[in-house]
Amino acid sequence: MKDKILHKIEKRDIKLSVIGLGYVGLPLATEFAKSKIQVIGYDTDDKKVEKINNGISYIKDVSSEELKKLVEEGLLSATCDSTILSEVDAILVAVPTPLSKTKDPDLSYVLKAAHDVKKHLRKGHIVSFESTTYPGTTDEIILPILEETGLKAGKDFFLAFSPERIDPGNPKYTVKNTPKLVGGVEPFSTLVVSKLYSLALLNVVPVSSAKVAEAAKLLENTFRSINIGLANEMAIMCNILGIDVWEVIEAASTKPFGFMKFYPGPGIGGHCIPIDPIYLSWKLKTFNYTARFIETATDINSNMPRYVVGRIQDALNEKAKSVKGSHILILGVAYKKDIDDLRESPILDIITILEEKGANVDYFDPHVPWVDINGKLIESKGTEPDYSSYDIVVLGTDHSAFDYEGIYKASSYIFDTRNAFRNHGIKDTEGKIVTL
Ligand SMILES: NC(=O)c1ccc[n+]([C@@H]2O[C@H](COP(=O)([O-])OP(=O)(O)OC[C@H]3O[C@@H](n4cnc5c(N)ncnc54)[C@H](O)[C@@H]3O)[C@@H](O)[C@H]2O)c1
Image (tube, rainbow, N blue to C red; front, side):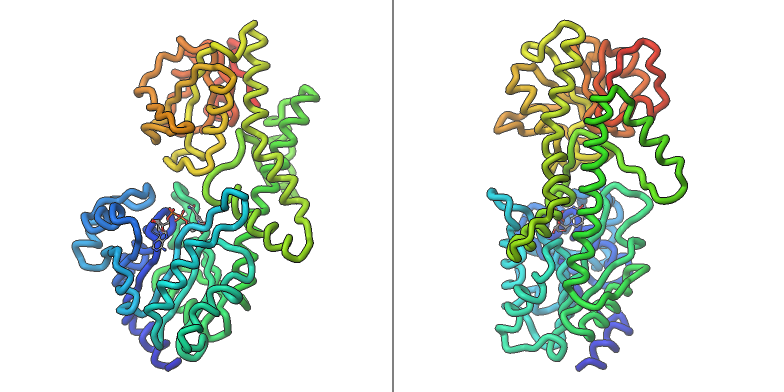
């Protein structure tokens, strides 16, 4: 069996399914299809499935043109029918791992996917879970579900965890060239799953266990969360001290060793950085250990929207204005630049708090046509908002598409949470920009 599987991979005689065709799954499926591996994606969302089969992409990093070509060549298709899983040789799982209302890991999507795999599991199947999760999920939860079939991992089927590290919107590091960690539930699974990824990806890095791969992903994102938290607290401290935090960061970064730049901002967003560290701290709570760095960084980062609103309030106060009744334009609502993803975006919290305080808030984001603020739909202002009509323009997301010079000229007052105007070479000769 083992030689047969390795031989099949070597011959590239592999049919693959990706479960979950979202921000992670669709680029992954596309990458394998581009490497001439036939991919049949499985998703419970029939709208996504229909779009894929019509060659229409809903993910920025995948163009409709390349998707259409792969669909026409028969290399990529999608279905809502899970029976496809019994027809393929390999299954990669990229379903969501959010937090529950009580801020605990919500593994319901992973469990549903594991049960779908179990239903169709057969000898020779190669399975890799990519959804970010706490150490132990693959060994302690997924493996027992799959082995309920009577099939044994390492003998009958092969199971690994391989974290997805995709950075949406990053033109330099894509699915193809970002090193891919693979940790199997036993050594042969690590080998088989590594060889499988090598069919499409440039750099596969095997590690000794699924737990190491799970923990490595959480370390990466916890590292970011904590360092962003430090930068945010530095911004708060510098404001108290009357020092420009942006200049401090640039000054510190002239040290060529032992320092790495992180920037403050309006808070953290996306499906990863605000959530993943909590998966780690939750797991440690089951051992009666408190992950103090994670809790402190989470606390600082999640309070940034309220801090930003406080600073906007101070800025308006300088002009003898109150937040209540003021007209505020928010520039950029996506959680980071040049993308359309609103998940966990702190800018939405800023809008909510400003509205609660009685401000009239509009927004302009070329990537996001509308937002839902507590059940109320707000549309993005057209391409040329009347900047001069607002009491303050708040830069929330530093999209490249903004005309920074034009906005500077047209606005009377600006609060910049990202230092974006200076980064775009604007000299504040009129003293109308306040930065975080
Ligand atoms: N988005 C990122 O930048 C990113 C980066 C690295 C890792 N991750 C991790 O990757 C995982 C997936 O994230 P995402 O951003 O792609 O999520 P997503 O919400 O964009 O996509 C998930 C897809 O899975 C589908 N789905 C849900 N349950 C399913 C099921 N049981 N069977 C079939 N399809 C199902 C949904 O319909 C959706 O299309 C998460 O664990 C996330 O933490 C995300």
